[in-house]
Image 1: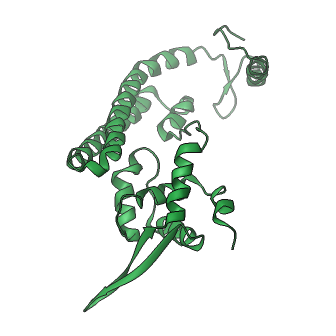
Image 2: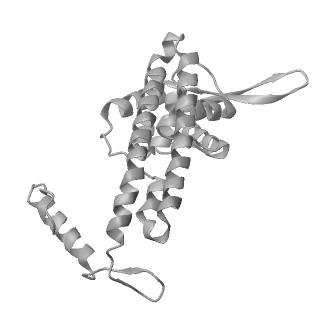
Image 3: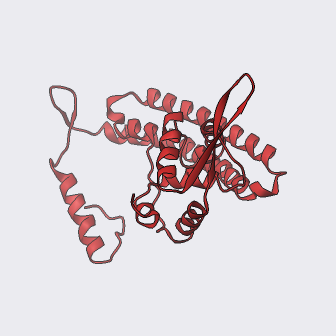
Length: 233
């Protein structure tokens, strides 16, 4: 078996999330961890499947960061409880203090569909945005509900803080989405200026391959340590 220090350097953030949930002084089942992830870290990082949770627990137990025991009651199927070890606590504390700050990865399904908005009608795009706003409003409601019911427990002060942040984040997302409703009209008006389309109806750029010029321009600026001034390329 590899030494824990060696293995911990290759652990993904999902492993650290599971370890972090075990640092609140309780033994938890895999189902407990799944439920807690759904109402806490799921708002801003990870909402795992139950199989993912157990896969992480198995891996963490194999390197000594987690330990488990089975408890049984008469007439009831036994359940396995997981707890964090001293080495696991040391490792996750070190990771939370010293891991590099990464740029958040945004995977926004609605924005992907708007990016290819030329395949759709403006009113349909607006309907997608309105549906997105409704979904985010529900996320705000859920985040607030969980924060309200958790804030009386001092041990959960920082999880509550992140839930309140999630509320603010989702409210900002709604404001950005509402701006998109006008942006769609502007983009549609500009798109109407496309002069030619191919036989499939796809728009033909006035300067084919221009995206390469954009890429080269940005790369040159980055290499020179400069920033663009917003001028056309």
